[in-house]
Amino acid sequence: MRLSKLQKYILLECYNKKYSKLDRRCLVRFYNTGKKKTKKDIQINSISTSIDRLITKGLLVGFGEITKTKIIIEKVRLTILGRNVAKKLLGEQKKLPFKMTKSK
Image (cartoon, rainbow, N blue to C red):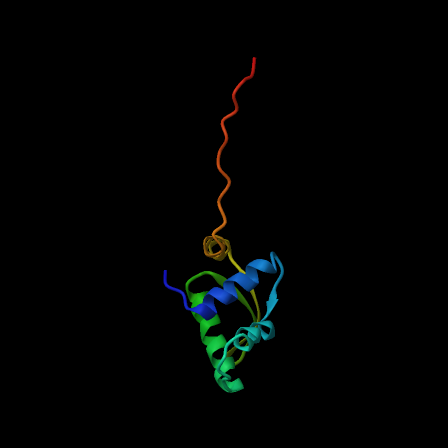
């Protein structure tokens, strides 16, 4: 599964938040780290499309309002699949099964 830098950032921010919901306004910090300054409209649109695509892939759950014309997502939370992908992005090692041996 290919993910953009923004999508990876969203997954890692949600993973750091653990089991609570992440406000989408926190995701604007992604653009503060870059050298180039982009317009606010472009930032909001790219964050919205990235969140929508992550939701369709089943990595995020969105919370917000549904109007007649559009869906407004205010907060997001990771799914179990999203948590596994975020762990792979971090490079965390999974717990290994240990065999118990009896000592004499």
